[in-house]
Image (cartoon, rainbow, N blue to C red; front, side, top):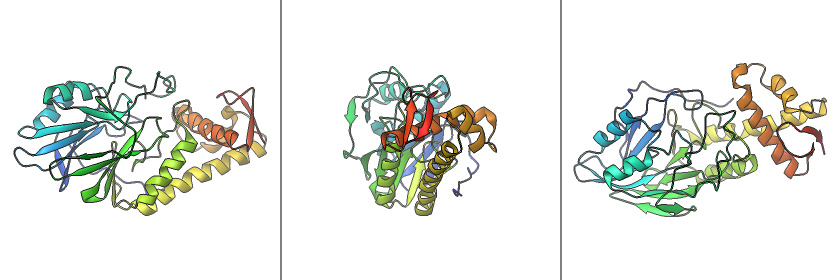
Length: 300
């Protein structure tokens, strides 16, 4: 079982100091994929004139913009950093960056909107354009803090996490979340890429993970081991269902997710599809006519 983390009490729009170098302001956009809302992180010292970075400004929301501007009053924002271009992370970046006169740093957006938006409320922000394009490995330094960009594709093809060296912490975006498993939804989401990224995060041995949604993960090693084991177990269950004669995703999902609210089955269908695509690429299953969501799947 994954040791999910409960969210402690909070107040929308309030800047909470959560570590010596981190403050968090949560947007009032709760939902099935955002949990309690988008947590925007302010990285740096709290004193007057200090230089800070702001991670994932969040959705277009006037109240959240006002809260962020109030939180950085008296300090200088040197970087606005975005983990990926989904609408609960990226749209407020440009208005906020313009207000504080800071550049936006992020991975290159997808060439076209290819997320499975008909089933998930996780559309890309089609207007998002970073000022500085990151590919992973870049070091972003400021007033008493240093962050490294870590490419973590899988949830989104352009997902980027950020390691805060001074606290051995990772701002994990939606790659790892303390309250839930991460949605990996084709065609932009890629399960093989996700598992490879997860291994890279595990190998780093971080002390704390700060997801954009929900509470921090303060014991990452056992949590990530369970996170990975869950994905591996789900893959094995899918193979078992294929062996039992379930050849379509619509047949597999009710069996594997019988204990889950059926309103979440569309998202579960996308996760099963992502696993099947990875299995098909590895030569373990075959799809007719091809690896589309309504294909007929058989063991290879």
